[in-house]
Length: 260
Ligand code: F6R
Image (tube, rainbow, N blue to C red; front, top):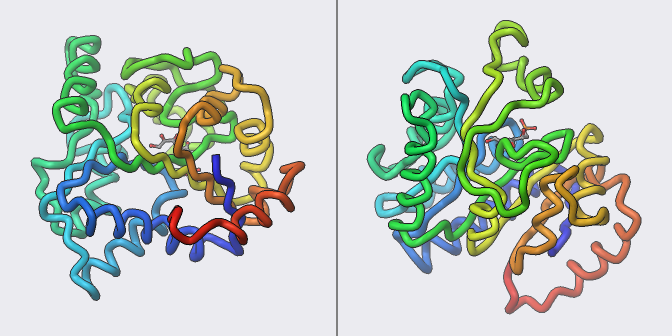
């Protein structure tokens, strides 16, 4: 696991966008794993800029969203399919048919979850997965207690998560209580995972993720088992890390040929 501590979200966005750009230049039909929420928005803005100014090409890329609320009707402005379109995929030249998300409106939820797993596999798996982290350590909507081997499924949101996400709705009562999410086992299958966290409110979750035991109480800690996980943090999110100086030293001395 590489922990990279940066001055702020602009530097984080630039480094994450570098990784996406390098991947697309190497593999134009790469499969991107997309998170919603606030954390990846600066990365998406940076990618849109590179698309507009430098012609970064997404025409052959495929994308899979991490998760989706259950029960929001198609086209609801806060459904993750809609959010991803608004903040990213609708602003670059990726074909709408190449952007996938779990179907939170499905009548047969287990079948929809299996279909999503099958679609990811049929696409050849996710090359680069962007992740945020919840204040309770969730990734995707894998809340505390999620099986470390879980696959795409329905989960019940923790009340804190609903309160955290109420800022996107008129009130917490409007935040759905359930979501479909890629499982922790699904996320582990991605070839490269980049997790982004900013702000002091993420510091404890980041510490549990990086320096705590691998344990379902902090779902994100499963990334300690991933062979290529990169954790991009600002100073505030890194403020509880015991080995922050070592992570800085290690990144400063990383052999350039390794890339991110
Ligand atoms: C979003 C997702 C969530 C968020 C997490 C952090 O698709 O899966 O795990 O990444 O809740 O959200 P923000 O970035 O808004 O703090």
